[in-house]
Length: 306
Image (cartoon, rainbow, N blue to C red; front, side, top):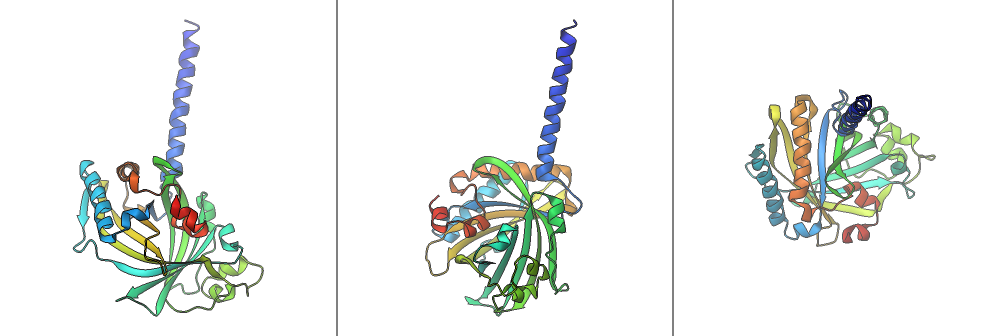
């Protein structure tokens, strides 16, 4: 009997430890911190899936809606689910990637209208960290506060190359739309919109250039939404990137996002479970262990052939 009691206590301790670990692991990804306003789940996709874009859109969207139906998750489809928006995306940094080394990302997006670029574009400054407090404190403020959108979000991707997994990182961003383009290319020029940029380099005259000389030509559709528990609505987007001047797609991405304001513990858990199952459903099309930012800052040809 004396031996049995210690064994029972040991088992109880191990059980409690396992539960605690599981809870901590879950919180690290799904922590509904009051500061966090939204979450976005993202999977990078192989270019082969979009050799014919519309067919690729349909295949991925049908896989997602089929899985949702099996799991009892409602889907709303937009009236024109495959309507494309077109534009370009460019990441800007110094020659030695000083912004990226300090966890900052500066991105320029230009939308197209009937095949021609608009005169105005969008600038976004983002800081990423696994520490929510560091992300929240990052200086991404804008001088154009009335036109800027400040957002503290949790981005969720796969954990490395492990299918059926998830890991999160916090991102604090500020986006300014309808900026007159072009903008001159020094740090000082962009610091006129985001003053914090001036503190990230030694010299305000330092030139900011397209990272790895990449400008991505982007096509995007918003086919519909997923409706999780408590009517938590997650907007789905599919995008395909081409490198300007090339005819074949480079990468694709599927994402769904929602505001935490309307979430419940069950809906958060349901969204995570769906994300992990979606990876299994479209595994043959996934480009694992990478994000769009990784693609741009990494070796383009190496990324393409993975």
